[in-house]
Image 1 (cartoon, rainbow, N blue to C red):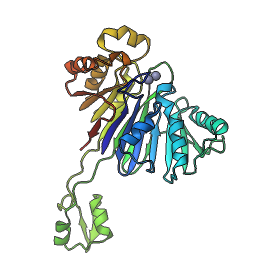
Image 2: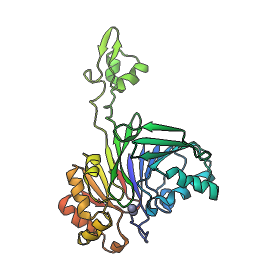
Image 3: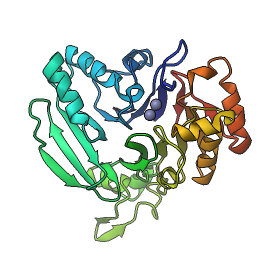
Length: 326
Ligand SMILES: [Zn+2]
Ligand SMILES: [Zn+2]
């Protein structure tokens, strides 16, 4: 599992930093968080494959987080993409893409679903394809979970910014321990569907006896899943801390340095210090500072140093930085 920063600038790109976008490679699929302008260039530079199952999560409708999305979808429509695509974001996400279809002829021949998060009704509004502007269904949300699957779920939280903005958490489910085929053979269990069940930690009936794979040493004990939280743009509040509790990695915006704390507050953004305090409060293991204002082109390390005084395990995002999650 790998996390790749595709863009780490706030508001305007500069020679080193593109606008916000983060990719997570996980089990043959790509999860993307925000699509800043021209992020597709970094996507290609990072060696990511365009025909992979993808899920995209848009935090909010500020240009520096969304303008790259239609361009990326145009590119995918030129390729012979076949893999499915799910795109999540605030209300009006479908309309935004539908207008690109109406005016610019955006097409999607691959399966695509656009899912709007309605925070007022706590519903997900799903649109299938770009042909009809009628939603295909509405789903009631449970515990702010917007996507759930065998291996992971995605949860969102409404955060404080100048427009409706969501932070997202990738929450992996507990993972099975290592499978020991020798031990299964020793117990006389033939290689079959039973092995699969044992590997998944299920107790099976074999020769009239219950076999508990953990107790019998066939699989190691379950390991807790990994968690990554991405803040989007925000002014600090409890909602990000609740969402990101015990994250392995917190990717937090740090638009400003400590000296501009007042400006940060006014513009509903965070400073390096705010990010570090949030990381500490949520008991995160590591903090990545991103969404760096172009005014710090020459001295962004200052933000890192400020944050490290409060939260030592901090790194500064750079475009194409790769972080492996063990
Ligand atoms: Zn922004
Ligand atoms: Zn913003």
